[in-house]
Image (cartoon, rainbow, N blue to C red; front, side):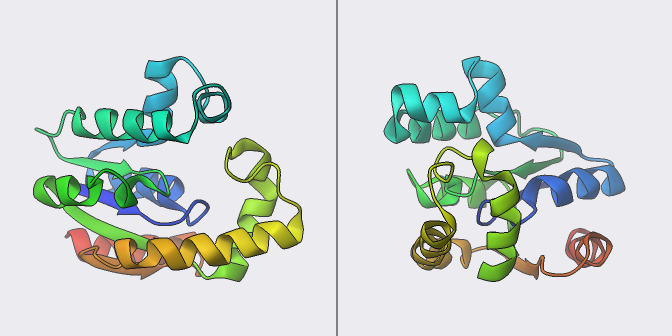
Length: 168
């Protein structure tokens, strides 16, 4: 069984995904990290030099070329399930868990790391709040197609316990 973690940037997919994989003895893959390794550029550099359409095509290519014959936990990028019918492919090859965080939590987390996020690094605080609100509303129908949902507004240990209840 493969588990795909989906949700907005900053929701905790990578952090929880690593802990989940370790807890259940699965391999962990971070799609963004894989793209950076294979493309030999950061996500920010890809966006700046080649644009979002190129990045979305890379994302789809690397997603569909993951070695899925073994049990894996895959942390996807925030937009991964919402582009190029990626959600349909993920549903064919595993189960999806929507890692959901409310807008205030996302704002707090993204304010800290926004300089490393290509879609966010140029926003001031008000623009970031507006961006989160608008894009989350656009992506939520996609995210809600997941098989399971957990709220990551809690502490990490509580969220991990909830994740484990789905996968065991």
